[in-house]
Image (cartoon, rainbow, N blue to C red; front, side, top):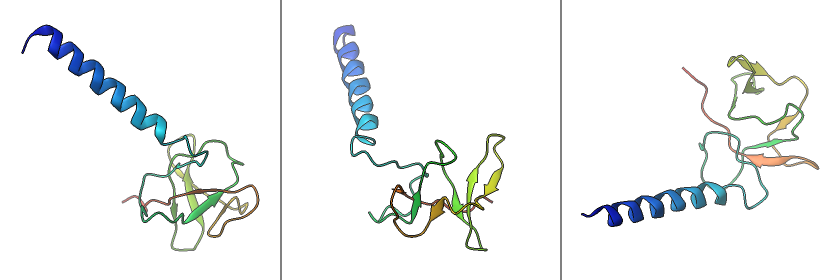
Length: 99
């Protein structure tokens, strides 16, 4: 394979990856969590109170736990994560409790 074909293939792959990532947010809905529950129905609604949240899970006590700034999971005690949609809440997917 010559250099031109390799470079062209690399550019095409990089562009496709960028488009795929951009498509995740074009709907205006946030998908903060790590993809579990991908049956198309959200299992968490979040109002954005804590800022951008990447991940989280429903604990055995029915509270939602999200990763804090230090990487440790923090219990939501302010009802900012809910199991049902609400005004101002955006749908996302909950993950599994880390081991």
